[in-house]
Length: 491
Image (cartoon, rainbow, N blue to C red; front, side, top):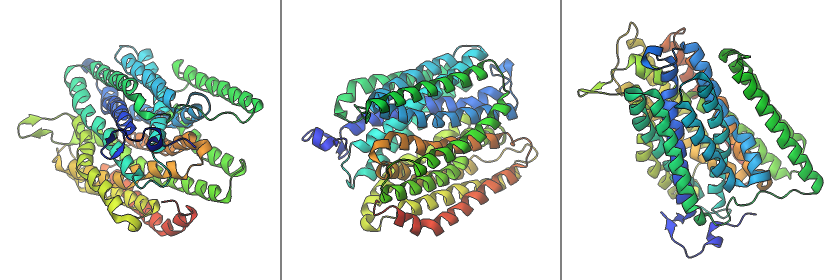
């Protein structure tokens, strides 16, 4: 078991009553999210902008497919990223190497040329796969098992995520939409570079958390792991080569990726349930993780339309003149984080205050799904008002993002915390990657839905998303008690 921060550095200062290492990871993730959300705020707008305006001049269908491929691949790579950290690098080095790749990818996007565009996206995908799951895993390693501060710690960590996500659309969005799209990507790269510098200067506060990979059980096991790593590198290389030489169109590749995501989910859990020397308690918890991943996928498929359909709705159908100030479409993506600042401390306090009455994760997931569905229900009348080119009030999007934020706080930090508690220690990093598989599948669906933006009535598109979110939230509520029993007392 990895030694907790309290044992490693007793007597040292704390970060809002939590282990000092939480501040190191807080700011690392803040800058990584600044980089990611800064680029995401611009991506679909940049692809659909005309060549004369400095964009790529793509249609919505192609841009939506590329957006879905990119945002889902970012999280899909968390699976091998967590495994590589577990077996070879340790979480500490994986986070650093991932940050280097992310910064390099953002700077590649700033260079004109389609080769640099696709190369930059691919490099960011690889880097985020290394950084994203492992920085979250290290947060969990700062706490002793059963420490009641863990959920609150993840909520504080989530504030760091949203501080970066709040600033990114305002800064990168302004630079990209007002000055030059590519300069906006460069600003995102500078953000990641700042995060790397902070991480190196402050990593001493992490003690031994994430420092060492899990040792191989035998020389034979070590050899098998190296073989699998070589096979993984080969598969990634083939995929990148196919993309680089244009063997598939964006839409064809997106279709293949959709099938691959479904197969990956069944392959991962099929492998776990048919192999491994799991105890009955561990096997039950693996079932819970699988169910939580499915619920989270449905949530993210709605929530992550912020960068696709909601971004297009802000750009094309929303009145952005507020008190004489012309807002940029990308600015609306900061609303989620603005509401997060207001609500996250309240939710962190609420979970601790409830004590034994604190709802189990399954109940919180149910609320998350219902609220994200309600957020789209708000947009149904707004979409009807926008028919014929009429611009609607920005308050409609404000209401949607408020409800989505409430849903996110019920689901996302709770899910991160639940995975660190439910996952068997020997596959902790990989299981965090499995959790981010839900983001991959949800982002893929959110991107593909953007392809219907011009070919499907908006009120119907938003309405069906609302129905699925609320409906599955009710199903999750009905299943909450048996899911909680399978957790075996873990809360």
